[in-house]
Amino acid sequence: MGKTPLTCNDFPGFVSNRILMPMLNEAIQCVMEGVAEPEAIDGIMKLGMNHPMGPLTLADFIGLDTCLSIMEVLHMGLGDDKYRPSPLLRKMVQAGLLGRKSGEGFYKY
Image (cartoon, rainbow, N blue to C red; front, side, top):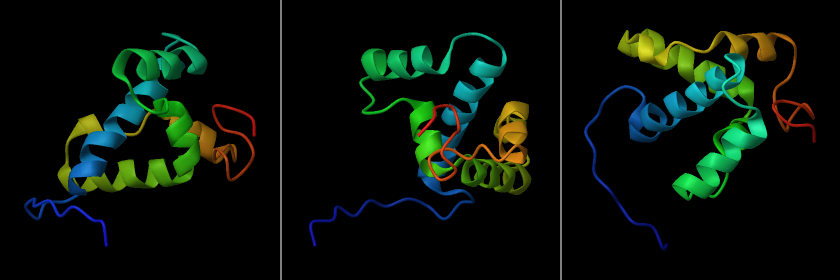
């Protein structure tokens, strides 16, 4: 099948979501705080961290509503404020800006 099995313990949120979602959330928080524009944040992560796509592009691809839902589950399930969703994420989802699936999120599609 071409798959590589990796072992981890049974914990809420899975390894990938516990690591990825706070990074996406922090990128969203950086936009909200005016640290940088989405293009700059994505460019820095692509060029500086060798990510294949920036975190805001990835959030748009996943769906901002899906990102919000995952962050809420992590925040509730783990009780750790590092998983509290950014207010900008909530605002964008409430406005129907869901990313690629709605045609607009941090970018227009």
